[in-house]
Amino acid sequence: MLVILFILPLDDYPIVRFLLFLIPYFTVGYDILRKAFKGILNHQVFDECFLMAVATIGAMILGEYTEGVAVMLFYQIGELFQSIAVGKSRRSISDLMDIRPDYANLEQDGEVEKVDPDEVEVGSIIVIRPGEKVPIDGIVVEGNSSLNTSALTGESLPRDVKPGDEIISGSVNMSGLLRVETTKEFDESTASKILELVENAGERKAKSEQFITKFARWYTPAVCYSALALAILGPGRSPSWSSAAPARS
Image: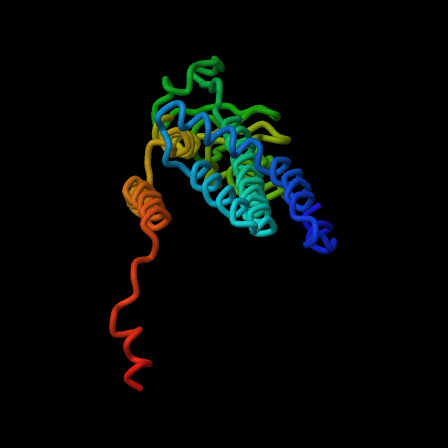
């Protein structure tokens, strides 16, 4: 719609041109304007939605309809890419949470008992049947099998293991029966460390992100107030010497 309106010869019909440009403007920017209005009602004025609303509405008032719609459109395209990236991250995290083991098959005195992975000590022997997750890091002492490590490494091909090979928790045993001697406690295993990092990621921010957040609290209102002052007061009077120079020459 924006491209078509840009091409159409509507300069001789300013009212019609304005009304037609309102269609793509509200189509692409309705939710941004609504969020900006809600922010004003909730006394949270200075955010990106407010800035986009002020910029685009100002452009429309000045008659720069193409620029007003284009700015809102590009902003929405950026938001779309961001939502796609966030969606992929959430799906990856959801897949990653599946690596959490529910139990461990602890071998004691020739018998196998299902226990909580927290109860397994270092040096214990655990049995991993086909289709089960590796609950704790360890070394294979008996058995040959293939492990699905895609949730941890992203590799689609299974990894073959044999006695003496080290395996990490979160992998899935695909074929043979394995007897594994644990080398770490559950809290120190690979799966637990990864899950801990994922769960705490939202609470930790990079220094640059913290700086930008603090900077935006002052920058956004400063720009808005400066723009308002410029609109009301104007750019100021020209210096007296600039108007006197042509007379002297």
